[in-house]
Amino acid sequence: MAANGVKSAVTSQAYLDGSQVKQTKSLISELCRLFYNLGWVSGTGGSITAKVHDDSVPKSEQLIIMSPSGVQKERMVEEDMYVLSSNGDILYTPLPKPYPHKPPKCSDCAPLFMKAYDKRNAGAVIHSHGMESCLVTMIDPLAKEFKITHMEMIKGIQGHGYYDELVVPIIENTAQERELTESLAAAIEAYPKTTAVLVRNHGIYVWGDSWINAKTQAECYHYLFEAAIKLHQLGLDWSTPNHGPKSQFQSQSQSQTKTTSPRCIVLDIEGTTTPISFVTDVLFPYARENVQKHLEETYDTESTQEDIKLLRAQVEDDLKNGVQNAVMIPSDEKGKEGVIGALVVNVEGMIKSDRKITSLKQLQGHIWKTGFEKNELKGVVFDDVPGSLQKWHSSGIKVYIYSSGSRLAQRLLFGYSNHGDLRPYLSGFFDTTVGNKKETKSYVEICESLGVHSQSDVLFVTDVYQEAIAAKTAGLEVIISVRPGNGQLPENHGFKTIKSFSEICV
Image (cartoon, rainbow, N blue to C red; front, side, top):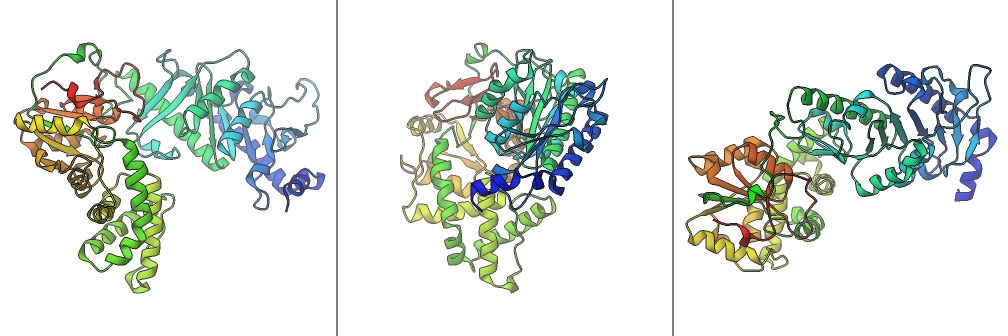
């Protein structure tokens, strides 16, 4: 059906009176009663909107149901709902009710809801006045972001896992709801991964691709806000992996002073020794484009069968946990083609999600090995890296690599680099088999493997703030690498930063 035909069909009176529109109206009434009991929409505050799901209508053309403004949300019924076109035009206005009810008025949140629909292709948006979403923005009146990590409920937020740092932008409140529209739109643009925006001293906007997804995330956000408030009351830091007692890091100016020379230096790769773009624009695409060819050519080899075994175990776990894009891998009895086809689908999904898992990294390492050996790939390091590695090696300082890429991939990158074979200057390699890079215990394990007398004998250099926190908590000296293309660091992070290894004084 042509676009104009779709618009005409969904705006017809018959469609407006149809079961799908009625069901969505009823759903919003039910959700508002639920949210009232949770304290999210009390005092006529807050609102909710959802698209009328219809498989025969493109999502961008689906009608929008929106709750009214200034009414008792727990008492609303289907007839109180507004119906809007996909571009925000009001198609149905509820009839007035007698005193003491106010004349009907569409939600003051309407222009903000439309931004989430337009910019994120949302299927539903929830605006909550839950107290926890208000208080959490008041703990630090200058904060522009809410951040939390290492909490189970983070997994309920789209695109996030337990080890990830969840970042929610905070915008300043205004006297009128509609005046928030542009700042909310700017936050959505500035934070492409976020599914929520906090409004200081006010509440939160949460969206999802369906009402279920929006509701689930809203519940998880409120849980995390409440947890942060309680941790704050206990004097604990919710933003760090171990949620330990709050401590003030040295100011950046103080941390620039020279420390005792380390016995060992542990280097990250992406954003530290090597441009992030080399990994994202060269290595990842090469692995993705060659995974099927590699599996077909090496299927019966011992190393590939080991890779498949690891991937099977990972996919089975993913399926149990409802991981998106996970596809069941058939048994070997079903034939080589079926197994490879399913493996390719799973691996492509893992690469797209940039998952830091051993099974994926091991397979990628084997694919890259072929590329390096065929001279189709060449490792890239920053120009200051080779000289620094040679200097540290000559000074008797042992240098190690710790990366989410497999140890094989690490050796290949430095062995076939744009500055030649740099492996003679490196004493060893660590990957995720020692632990996640955002976990403190991983750095404790590394220090034990190195046999140092004290964790402070080890200097760790990384571009990732969460990794720096984890290593610092383990007792290591830490420097953050600031290279072109690296992510932005939090204000007042407290770590020494460098733009070149030549700035490291040892």
